[in-house]
Length: 115
Image (cartoon, rainbow, N blue to C red):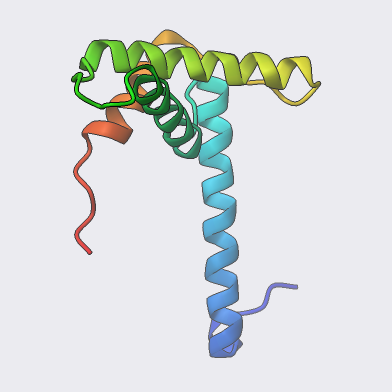
């Protein structure tokens, strides 16, 4: 039997809305995984790893980081993460070049939300 949302308390409505949001986001992540797109958190970690590689190569920080090299290094880190996941028996995502490029573009070129 279905419960009407109007009979739910405020806390129950909020919990219901959050549950719907979690389910929607889970479906979205599954779709991205099937399309070969890395999720935003994975892109963030790969960007940090790539920047760390550049900074450790030049501890003075005097050298500029070329955007093309940064993108290639981020893609390499995503590939390494996928290989490590596969080697450990975890559910590895097979990224596509287009998916990685689109995820990087979405993550790095989308303006930040106003605080």
